[in-house]
Length: 294
Image (cartoon, rainbow, N blue to C red; front, side, top):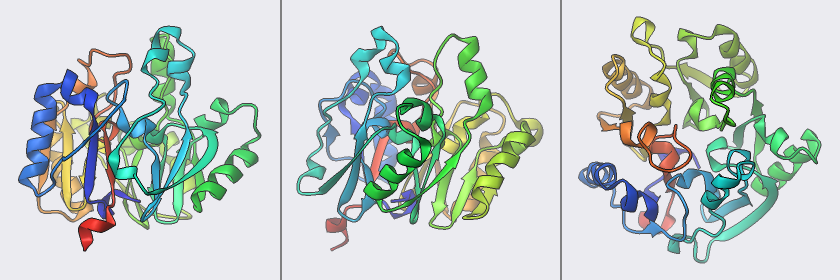
């Protein structure tokens, strides 16, 4: 379910426990725009709800996967952060399908009848051939899987820091609607990687792109991690030169009147827990609730 069709959003209880100021700003912004954050996701071990919550693949149908990311599992001190039994009342009575593949929810972007994932999934399921991984995901989700290469800049940065990269698709692109994808600003700094993405994606989707020219920075990736619930859009900022440009571009591409900006420094660079580097899309779990339409 792509974001423009969702109408409810949930956050981990860890967010309000550890990031009260940021959580308050997010909830107030949503409430002022008609989106009420009612319940918290319980029994979680970190704030990154996108990664461990099931993926909505139909009106009342969700796909569950094995959440055991290598950046947590392979670092013994990080295993305490693996959420393996998150609970949310919204899922009561919903159909849950298991795909028996190691995935992160942040590495799955749903766009109509297709799912976009990075090829990191192959490494995390090395006991299976890529065709078998693809088959299992497609059978469970009922959607066609589109594979994209990982972001080489993220891989290199993780190597320099002696870390394992996330390689999440939601840090690379965002679904605007069922037929349109918005890419991060690769046109500003990596034309080779951009070309590879276009080669994989353009046969299936219309492509829009962020671009900031001389206002780009190493932090310009943050804008693609916006949160959209229906027509309400919250865009993360880091007090960067491109903030205003990003607002104008998102307004144009998403066809919305207002973009609410949220300072993301605490989430992205000052987080006290293990895995920093995410933002508003990473900490949220937005869904379509058919009962709210009646």
